[in-house]
Structures are given as structure tokens and as C-alpha cells.
Image (cartoon, rainbow, N blue to C red; front, top):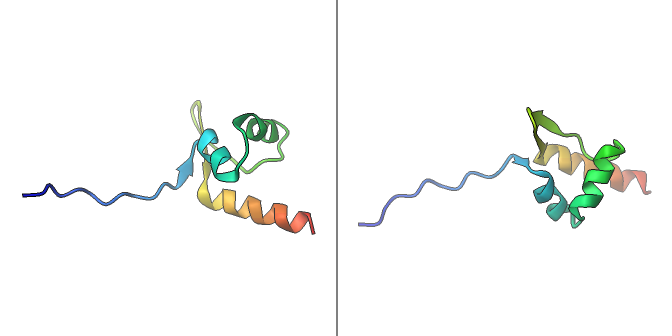
Length: 68
């Protein structure tokens, strides 16, 4: 009898390395943008820093519009 696996839940929050990979940027570049307050908004949980998928998509759209 196969074991029932719970369906995979999509991530709502990304770590900095995950967000950088999604953007096709190096971790260092994304950390630099965040330090300069030019990157996407972050959410802090103590020492953990995460970026929401929605914030990342909104930030990308803002970058596209700013370059027009």
C-alpha cells in the first residue's frame, strides 16, 4: 500500500539566496541592494530575513516601470 504524502505547499517566503537565485543575481549583489535599500522589502523574524513572493514580484514590476 503506497504511503499518502501531503501535497507540497508552495513557499510564500524566500531566503536571500533563494530570492537571488530566482532573480538570476548573486547573493552578494542582492545583499548589496538590500544594504543600499534598493532591493525588495524584507521580513525579519529575529535574525532570519525573508522576502515574500508577492513583494518580490511587485519589486520586479517597479524595476521594469522605472526603466521605461
